[in-house]
Image 1 (spheres, rainbow, N blue to C red):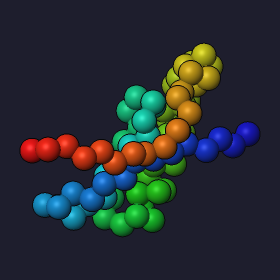
Image 2: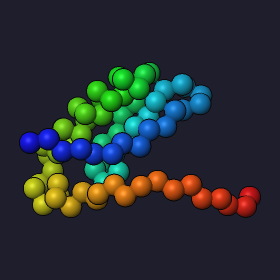
Image 3: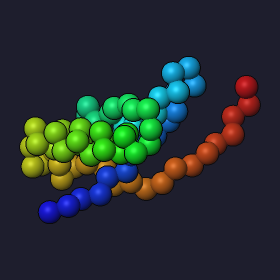
Image 4: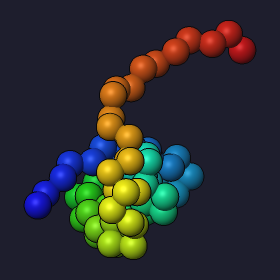
Length: 74
């Protein structure tokens, strides 16, 4: 069975590395020099995290609802 998960990806300005994490899955984060490499690494780390999680934990992973930008006075 396959399941889709949403990854949050940022680019570190200093190192130029892409950093990805999957919200709701503890430990599901990694980095890579390219987006393609990051995608592969994220698939691997999510698979490993899911293997060690219990069935109830997997069922309780939040469902992605969206991203919103907010404006804050600084």
